[in-house]
Image (cartoon, rainbow, N blue to C red; front, top):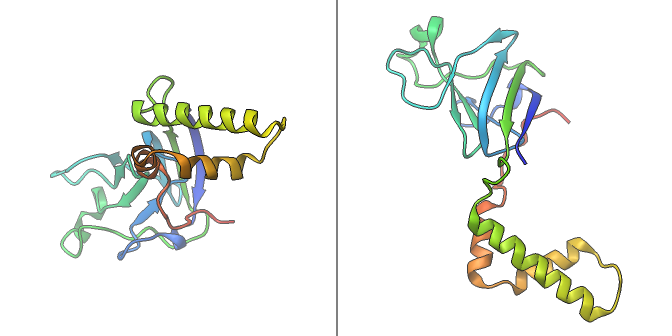
Length: 167
């Protein structure tokens, strides 16, 4: 379900070769409402910006924020297309919406969830027990899914991402 999140990130834990990437906890991202670095609100955008006004490029599907030189930072543009996040603890505040809105879950994923629920129901009635380990049952059910179903799950499962927030 789509929800609004307010999170604080450490600029020290930024990823990428230029330390310009922040990986949000939840995705896909539908809207970024606010990005502040060291208390300064940054301008966000989703595409090419020839005027140099976008300071944070939002890659919504992956849930990534990429720091760019913009506004007063344009003098840095000659040095690099990207700018590092400032390296401090809990200095980046992000407010955003993420998840699928009601009724917008992809049809192929919905179908696989229905198939998995049916498989789990059949397994519980065969075993005769009233309860079962859901994590073990879901792993077994996924292994019994068709190759198509397994591909769909792999497409939507979270990718290995660096941990951005402080523990």
